[in-house]
Image 1 (cartoon, rainbow, N blue to C red):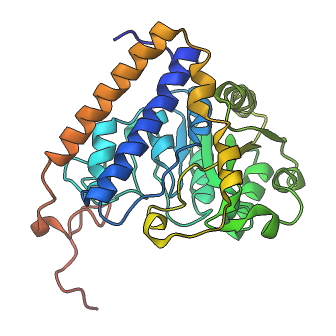
Image 2: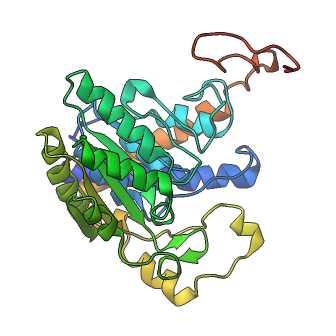
Length: 327
């Protein structure tokens, strides 16, 4: 395998291709019943994860959302362990206890995905504050969707980050919908206007182009690391698949076919793939396919957690909960 830095054209292509194939295979495992409860696919949004994470150092930290597999993979998580986590296996990132919406890997700076919309902003600000207090020059990134921009906790986190000049990058993945609610019907003013209101630089970029996202993220990360405080980058993207795989059975109709067809014309995998020589692209595709095949085999071949340990790991101190609960 030929190694390429994640911020090169080949590196960016490998990341978006890996995320795409991982999500497609994960959806297949939902349909086969190996991933119980479904997932929130991020197909179509790969450029945001790839571009932002390529601008980060290994010791920088991120927080993610219910649609977070791409962010976790782009930060360097092992696809096999991520998929095992989705499948609820003991070999998963979090021993099968976090599932699709709560994957974390502290060793990689992945402080966790979060199923509560907008809630990870406060965690990110706290991590940035703690690092600054400790004299570390790391940057903390908060990924969130357009549905989070009206949540109070996110706005409070932006306020504190700006007030204390914390090294935070707020990244909004604006895919046009909060579940089925269009942005135009939910957001007064603009998304970047929320950042500007707190005095932080805020820009809107093409979130389907990995290079464009990388450039915006790199500028914001460099500013934060130099003590310039937080920034907001709104990435305009499009979700190719359902909000949640449940939609495959529910048959919701909130987007017409012309819109979806138009949205698919800006495919991050195609856009970035066009920048890579044909031979190199074929090689990367083969490597990714082998990686994802191995991840599926690893996940499905891994054991489920032993129910005897169901009450383990509830407390950071190691305290074990008493069976049956009670006061």
